[in-house]
Picture 1: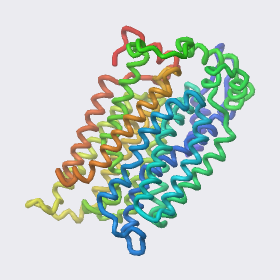
Picture 2: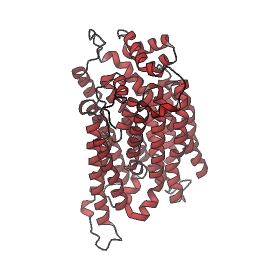
Picture 3: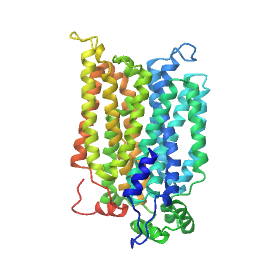
Picture 4: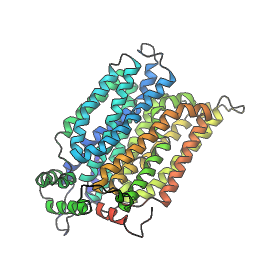
Length: 482
């Protein structure tokens, strides 16, 4: 995978300074990729937090478990609690990343992350697991804001889409890891594996520089110069980079936020776009699929082993995100988002039809034993489509369209929307399943997926190939439309 991407970069991408005299080679951006990868380790852990309940709660009900009498209501709380404190983490991160910096915020979050995993691993009772999940959700909420802000500020324009789409790739990798490990590890050892990966993340991140944009905003120019040289090589045009950052900060020289700025299109347009991107991402059902994957395969009659099927779906998410990252800077965000939403809706409508026809309570129930592969194939289609557009694009576009002065605030707002929506989707899963059945639930998620495609067609702007300054300036143009 890395070899394929490397060759494409060498062939297709050239980074030039203002007079286009001296290209910057792929090798000179090696440290940029390492820094982004170090930050994305925290998102891998976030993916593990998000999908921990899928294999863990099934294992908790097995013979020999401390909690084999766990109830369905307790399972839904274990699955959904991180989204509650994730909201608090989103709000705190907006302030912390603005005041302390992106890298520093991630360092502070590391200790609490490790504590949360160990609390879960050694929990003597369900309430203690609740506590661990609440702490992990808080850390995930902080990282959900700090990581995109950090990555977009170290990424060159030409590969900004690829690097920032790494958020969804890392998240998918975390989901794949936790579900795959869940097939061979007990739930307590799963939690310990999360603590180990968090420790690796902090060991790498401590060696990375702070965001140059944040350093320039704080008038720490010498540190910003060292950061740029580390990230883009000794031969990079440092003064041009500093000038570009300062130009982007011109409109944000004042540290005081005026209520009149709510009426500024460079503020409210990114907020509205972010709100709908995050809302559609979650109400399309992804959190329910990832939190209850094993249960879904167990219930709707898949002929494939539920643990294996869940791992395959998670692996598809990882692979599809790679393609999404490559396509994002070639086809553009808008087109990819529309294709993604349309294909997701088709997948869910097919899965809903299959579930309806195989429902035992249906008088016209059909024996679909020979077609037990359909749930796996349709969920693979859904996850592939999600990971191409609706999944990664909100995390790519939100830091792109947010001016640096408001970036932490807007990303925090977007993460807040995602956390609220994710909690609603995850917690309501069992109740909706009882009310309208699996088929109704899938059709509901499919309808929201289709709405996301319409939103992409009529309201989503295109940011491919534009510098951050050009994107922000476009929102103040009278010709710009949401």
